[in-house]
Image (tube, rainbow, N blue to C red; front, side, top):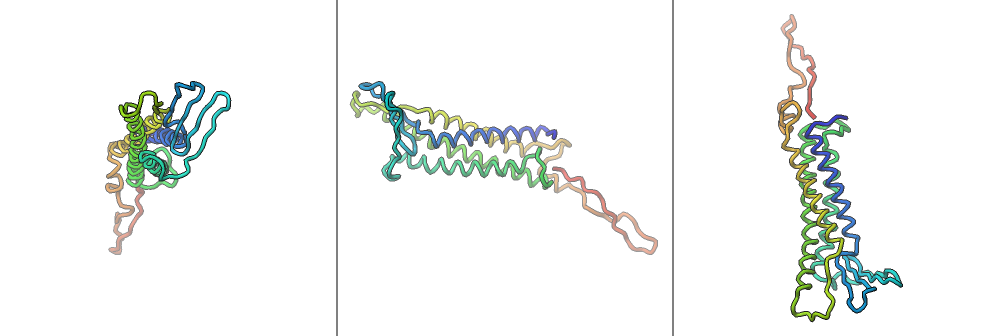
Length: 230
């Protein structure tokens, strides 16, 4: 089905939001939030994530162990767990609402204003999911940066560095932000006939009106078709 410019903007925002949501979920699961290389044993690499820590050895392979207690984690990891899970919920809800409000998909012909509000609400949720993704990822990166350049730690002690999951999390937050902004921007665009989608239902003609007067003085109501803008 052909879409207007507003419909294509909505579809682009939805696709970017889906990509960002998937990347955010992968970021939460990956253990490569922080990496540590031992100078004394170059064949061994440590990685740490939100749920487990792993050691990678060339001979023995990768061995992982889940964190036993939530309260024993550093504060940035505790907050990161909560916010990343909240981000998944907000992003999924935003995708469902935005999908129902797309102009290109017409399941049960709802009102134009109703669909516009669905896209606006979905875009707001996607922008919120972006914030709840970027904040924990940036906080963990900042804590890792501070520990790496901490002068109180002897130079012989290995330092944690940025893992691949942090960069994937930043990309996920960017996709969610752009997708949400496109969905919000689409609510401000006009329809193909030049009318605003917010005023489409308000300016619609009534369903019926008195158009004829019978010879006996009574009025007869004749139905008039409603051109509802979707």
